[in-house]
Image (tube, rainbow, N blue to C red):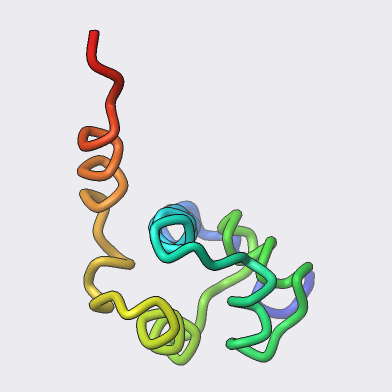
Length: 93
């Protein structure tokens, strides 16, 4: 087993939420995953694994994401953030 690999389903859900919210805020801030990886001091491969929820986020990662994207930390953990964004950009029928 790799170090920091996520095996608990509840933890994986939390890490996937952080990843999904981070993707949304990267897009809104016109930043890339590569830029985020550099800001966190990790490889692009590791950021991809973290964004997918297969490798754990550290508290320090979430803090640095918050600083890098100028987003409150609680927004990165919120299951509502992505849903709010999706509703805001829903196509008009």
